[in-house]
Length: 450
Ligand code: PMP
Image (cartoon, rainbow, N blue to C red; front, side, top):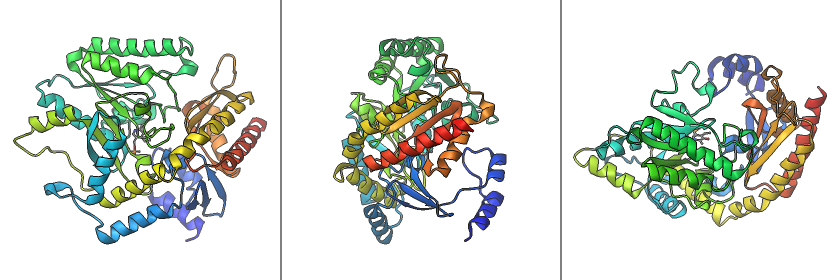
């Protein structure tokens, strides 16, 4: 079909996630047609280097034939098996066991979802059920970080602390609370790691005291805040937050939807920091975007609490496509590529090149901060580097950079507050990074001259 016809049909019928609907009607869709490795081609034949792995999910890169074969074989053998009525399928069972093997030792049980939002939503439901089962039914309040992102479900979007997810949606709910983000570049206490960690722990403690420990169910956080602008807390921050939660009797939930599966280097960011969460949510890199799937992993204690509390009836939480066998077969092959295929190691090997490229751009007049962990990074653009003054939002600087970057052959992510986000695939080579930074510098220069 011709691109023009697709643009018209899209404008008339397809509702896109998280866009301004009026802007989209005017701008039109960019139709992506084909992908190979780190590169995409759109319907106008334009070649693009994808520096965001789709939506920080295609960690393997595009066109991995062995994943396609795994999906095809599973579809032919058994395209669907429900998990209801005590049924199951081999790939889903093997995948659950594999995830438990890879995850922090505290996590022993897995519930599969279709993506990250329903993983977070499931975690919330399991947590409520757990505390009720234990007879602690007052524990109904949830605490997250400012700038946190925990998906787009009716409750998860309230845990998400970004204004556009609340506006006109009657969120956050009265039982959802926030504490300040550990944002080294803009922390009022400066960027000293110990001061940032102490401030976060003190804020969490104060919030729990204000609400009452017997009313707080859980604290949710990302090891690196993704959609809030790739905010990288100091090493040791995550462990300190866990220790505080344990002391206060609050469940500690790590949302690894972005950070999981090699994005920050190791398989899971929290495990590398010696953290043992009570629950953990994953998605994206689990299937590298080749099929929809997410999961919530929980500790044996949480599982046993729910099981005992509901011993006289089914636990009423389920999805038709939970543990979908095709997605599970895809995930097993994706995990094999990370480990045996060397992708995880390549990501670790390439991370210094990525960091160096971002840091070199600190010399550019527009760039105030460069930050990354593994292959997850950002540039923050400022009007005045000394004062860290933000550009006037009316200039729509990040959007202009996104458009110019696209014309120059790169896809990046433009966040609010003029943060540019990057999540290159784990298959990137040194040449891919050379091309990325060459095109990125041209883009920043072009926008500066506009
Ligand atoms: N949690 C985090 C940390 C995320 O980044 C996202 C998605 N960007 C989600 C949850 C929601 O995942 P999904 O979009 O697959 O529903």
